[in-house]
Amino acid sequence: MAKEITSTADLSLESGTSLWRDAYYRLKQNKLALFGLYVFVAIGLFSLIGPWISPHTYDAQDLDLVSRPPSMEHWMGTDNLGRDVCTRIMYGGRISIGVGLAATLVSLVIGILYGTVSGFAGGKTDTAMMRVVDILYALPFTVFVIILMVVFGRNIVLLFVAIGAVEWLTMARIVRGQVLSLRKLEFIEAATALGLSRTRIILRHIIPSVLGPVIVYSTLTIPSAMLLEAVLSFLGLGVQPPMSSWGLLIKDGAEMMEVYPWLLIFPALFFSTTLFSLNFLGDGLRDALDPQSANN
Amino acid sequence: MSLGNNKEALLSVRNLNVRFHTRNGIVHAVNNLSFDLNKGEALGIVGESGSGKSVSCYSIMGLLPQPPGRIESGEAWLGNVDLLKASSKQLQSIRGKRIGMIFQDPMTSLNPYLRVSTQLIEPLLIHERIPKKEARKRAIQALEEVGIHDASKRIDYYPHEFSGGMRQRVMIAMALITEPEILIADEPTTALDVTVQAQILDIIQTRREKLGTAVIFITHDLAVVAGFCNRVNVMYAGRIIESAPTETLFRTPKHPYTRALQQSIPALHSKESALYTIPGSPPNLYQDIKGCPFAPRCEYATDACTTESMVLEAVNKGQSTACLREQRGELS
Image 1 (cartoon, rainbow over the protein chains, first blue to last red):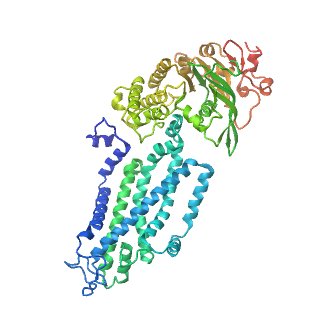
Image 2: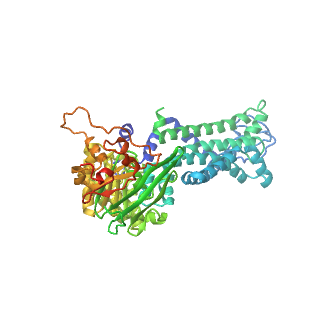
Image 3: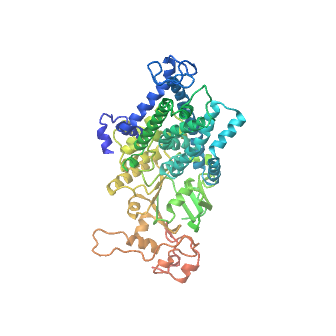
């Protein structure tokens, strides 16, 4: 603790240092995590803004320029239909990162609510709610998605829902575990002794206290959701051409990797860089929010 | 002490029985506990670990974790409300408003994620529904009253920026901010070192005198009780075995256990090498004990002590004991 305080001497004592602020300063010291954050933001901006700047569109075919290697005109080459790979990666990034963020958001909302209620209620309610999670866990994911696709037809929104529906399970378990240990702490008891209602205790005392692990886990959920999207697209269950996603691009690239390696290399590069940067960021956040584990 | 319904008492607990249903059996934590707390009085509850002193107060506050705990029977009248049968809504409006509570460990009883100010004004916002600004003013004043300098600045600190003694001051300010009629202090000085202990006791004492709050002071430290309480209940194995005004208790303890307790206080100037200890160990609470729970360790015990049921009876003015032989006048 003393180390942090000396290194952050610019802190004014008047306002007091929250644990969040402490964590922020620790995160700022972690070069790898910051690098991860910058890379992720850069790739995100590239995907978001790129398509407006790019002279090409994701579905414009140029049959005179089929499967060309990288050049000044097409930075990352063209695919077998003469579409600009760079632009397709930008659009793919929108979908992939979008799926990652949206699915994480879904998992956050459902997971926190479900986990908090289950952990705080305890007893039989808790057991029943956790068995439901166990059952859903046991469902094979691919089969679940195929069934969804068959029943509701293919569309991107469904993809978001399907991935979110799987990711919230782990989130709920993490939150429940946290709440279970929090519930026994004295400051929750003290809050009860002050006459706070259950709802107020959950909203004011429990949820803010579980946010640390939740934030860490969500930075790790984003890449895992992106990976799921890639798997689905790779299997042909996800995004449909001519729309693109990183998973889809990798799949197309893999089919022709011996002849036209750039079709695989570039999307794979973007995808793995993003996953890595998010993992670095997640690790850094974990260390920042839980200084005890950082020492190990 | 009369055990009929005492209309004058602020809080009157009658025949409280608390059990813990565990995998290994039923723990008889509190047995037939009755006591009164008068207005403005400082009542000490003394006993060793596991004697049921905290459990009984937690039960009164509705803070007993259920399960495994279960209140089998009993009443706890605060005015015309029976706390043990009150709805959770009713309890919420009483906790923090009419009864405040301080806990043992100040390091863990404040939420580390919230500023002290946020936590301090919470009871005011809930119970008095006053605007935040006003609540903040009162909170600053409350902090000053428990001896925290620079309160208007420090109120925005986070709990980890306070020392243990400071945090306990904050807890006291928080418990008393709504000026409750009763303050339950559950070993508030156990986790603090001795110099800070004295300061904290001092603060509770001055606040008590100013606000006229009645205090239930739970402790295992007879020395603390001596300087602080008007009356003391000595608990053993979930029962009150002696109750007396503090002075009487120290001058003429009637129960052998109380006497033994006093002998086990280390004296600084005594030359005796070994400190007196009570032989044996506290009884197993998995069994429902008939007779006096202290009998197996008591040098005066007779057969009657283990077979006849134990009742608290007045032997002197204001003093009552559960010792059968003392009641019969056999020991003196």
